[in-house]
Image (cartoon, rainbow, N blue to C red; front, side, top):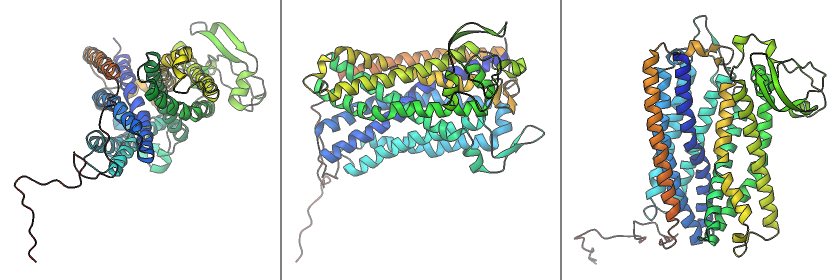
Length: 477
């Protein structure tokens, strides 16, 4: 048993499982800010009930995200101690910022958001909801900053002993990959959340349960998706261009490109292929002429070469080519599918087919949204596979090899912890499905009293409450 492979598999398991939960909380928190803001502005009770209903799914995801995220962080000290020792001056502080600055902000205001209804003024409650959303997305910023630095290290020097010394924190934080990576992940979490909320709303509409109520949530997410879905595709394109310039081996793996394409040549794009690492060729492939030139530079010929895998030594190439190649196409395909679904739905909206009276008749459209609910998760996980597996054999690209970053542990111990994690995470996943389905089956409580927007007092909404045995003060004069 290879201890490095086992440690990689364990981190992959914990990261893939953990990623399922903050993806929804970061995007859904923004949705909660929107519906609560609409309630404060319009005073319509339906928006208040939306905020209360979707917050239940939010807190379920938040709890499991916390439980699954802590073991992932501990692995930097157990399974990846040499990496932590070498890069701790930067990665340690960035991950510390994520915990102390972002997670604590989100967790601190979460109690007010969940239990502060009728206990704090409505505006204060709204501020708490905004802070929860800000904290959740600030966490995304710091995590993507750390990972982007591992993709394109900057802002310091690696000494002869392999330790990274920070010279300029801002340069390290704003490394070449950071801006597009943060924007791409922010849009991914928001788009995934929109289609999850839209898919759940479509399920209620298909089953004739509160169609008017969930018609509102459906239209809110559709209005946001009109901007988010195409913007996500554009930012993804910018990220692909960065890979082209910064990580030539990853691009070659993403495109199953074995031979170098020189500058000035029209490059074909491999739509589908089967990479064969033994023969260093593609067993079969379906190409679109000149398409890669337009994808990378939006022109018929390349201004710089596209390096093929054969230009790099076998030990310097990613080896799981099929996984990288098809994960990339899965992510891109889902992105275009969601954008297409958004476009079709928008056309139906313009035609007046999504009114409260007619939306239930759009059964095929609602089924499409129901099908789309898990697709965002698959796209996010596929994107992270491309990002991290495509970086191999480096943990810090071009600086620290994965084999040198792993702790020297007994393989049996890592296999044991891997088995324990797999078992616990399976139980957590089943529990999440059970409690999530219960929340959805029960549906919203539309009979819940709506607090007065003018109230600033305790539970009953009054502005004052006498304590037991308290006597009124008598006027003396």
